[in-house]
Length: 336
Ligand code: UFG
Image (cartoon, rainbow, N blue to C red; front, top):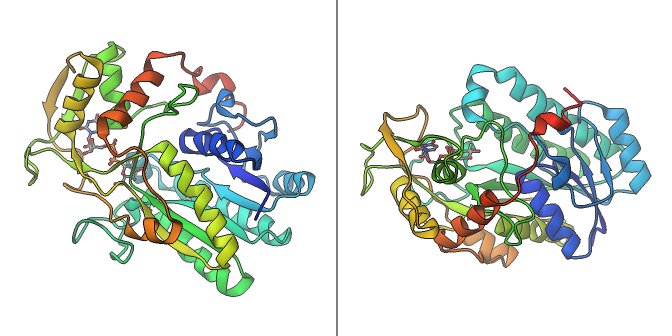
């Protein structure tokens, strides 16, 4: 089993929770993050290097200094809308910089990587639940960058013996149940934190994007998966590819669909407060229904989701939202 794991993007939302989980499971963890969107306070290992993946020689120094055994790679830009208006930002960061990371891995004979992919690689669903064999036709540059990397890694497996786990997340949600870590995006675009911010009065209201979808209550349905369940799956996936020496592609979701209105209702029940909201038109590019088949994750990884109830997930997010937040990432912005 690997003992020293490099976590690229370990100061971000899912990355920081995974670092905490790995440390709890006695792994030695090294974080690299450029802190463009990440938060230094979220890095729970002393082994932290503020570098950008564009800087190959700095990355190489980190691999040599810590004798890295395996990599978990979260570092990417993830705003779907922004990727449409500024695709070069996404191709350079999510593709070119990941190629740098793979180069350095190969040069240092590190062969195992767990990669953050996304359900956005599937594009508009032809059927639900989405399983891993669903055709991959991403409809935005963000999804395309993730699919490209899956395809590139498949070629690298053939040519260089790279072994990878491509983990296709559905909607990451919730926070560390101890309230130490949480979701802190700037700008925030995700439904649950926006709903909670509206309850707190940080923003005047939440805009519900579309009420005329072909769903039971007319609002979009998504699969909200708790960030700690994601963290667990990363560790299990890494151990699996190490043990079997075989690459894998796996969906990570609960298999349960929850509508926007159901999220709002659950948040009201958890907090005991009304959510101020306005109904507006559809947001471009939002499919009506997305939820995962997670059978493969359960079978291959022996993974079980601890947080199945959306109210439990929202409770953890609320605990975080009410507590002390990280400073704005701009306070730490030293690399562009
Ligand atoms: N929504 C609102 N109002 C808001 C924000 C969101 O009504 O202010 C709705 C959206 O229309 C959508 C649902 O809430 O129906 C969830 O939206 P999020 O923005 O929280 O999440 P997405 O499903 O759009 O995005 C997720 C991941 C992306 C990934 C995408 C793939 O966060 O990384 O799924 O479709 F690319």
